[in-house]
Image (cartoon, rainbow, N blue to C red):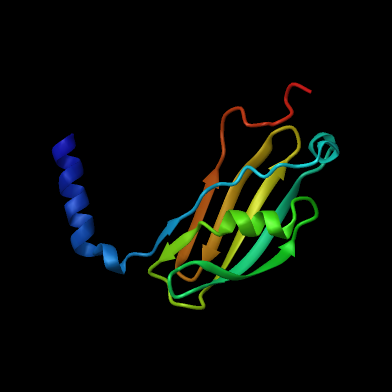
Length: 130
């Protein structure tokens, strides 16, 4: 099994050398919310867009929709993200999804020739025992 993994990895690297692949290094931020938002019967999304710097960092971060978290908190989360293989100035969008009774359930990131969706599973509701 290990040999098969090594062979598949080697084949992948010859098809798309690491310096030519589009990659992303992101962290899911479990944004805190006020208590009244946590217990309110509402589902909502946070939506932000940004451009990439030459080093692949999010810059020119713009709030599209955010009624509960705040720009400074989201900017702080995005500050550690890195995208490689994209051109400077590429436009990226990120959507964080909150579902009542479940908490943050997914994060979707889209841009030119790039799409990534991260679903959060398991017990994650920050107020399940309230």
